[in-house]
Length: 267
Image (cartoon, rainbow, N blue to C red; front, side, top):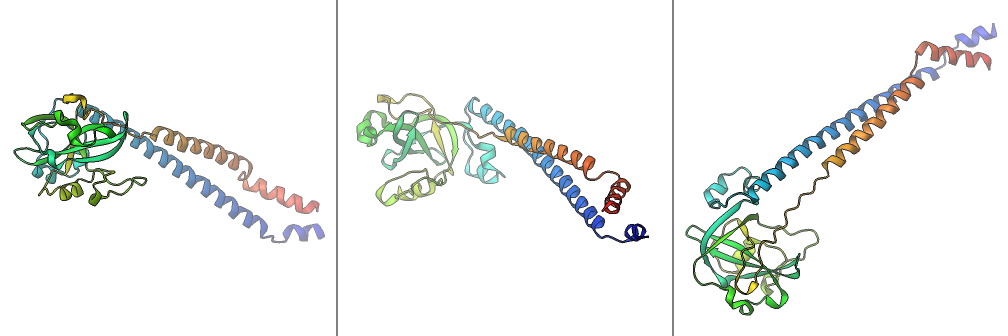
């Protein structure tokens, strides 16, 4: 009779254990779905990045074209995606008296980018003529590279730079520049308006050897494959945990209850 009374006694523990098992199972399923979704998203990002790199490579090695006019630029839904690193050809006259030197740490060491506005028939475009070492910063130290006549410039279209996290502030009043802020350069040099982009000149030599162009570094971070493998790896581990949980913790409910009842009767 005592054993029958114990067996008929309602114990809330099995129900709470069942709820706990359900919660753990739901958590594992949700995390599995999350890992798979994140892995798939990284695969899509990888395809996008490869396509972007292929398009940029095609632009860099294509025949030079005329740069976009202001109307074209404003009508573009995404000028960066459409025009960045486009190989362009311009004809015009350098405004050497408006030159700006921007501090640079290039492949050739520390020095400056020589930024000179080029007056074309349609607009004024800032040209990065290339790199000069510290001793060649002053224009009068490279007089032979200051042409007065109309010149042709071929190079890559670049977007205006924004100040990076570890880049010092420009001090326009003291003519100290650390990033290429086109709007500020245009204002300080007294220009009415310039194109919303600049052009990195190619490696065509300048008289006297300086400035030295063709130093554009095109580099894209592409960690999407490693990210995808990480998420899919976590998904595999999650599947293993889910299988283990189902086989050991959430087996036949009748068997689990019978084992639990037997253990109480034995006490």
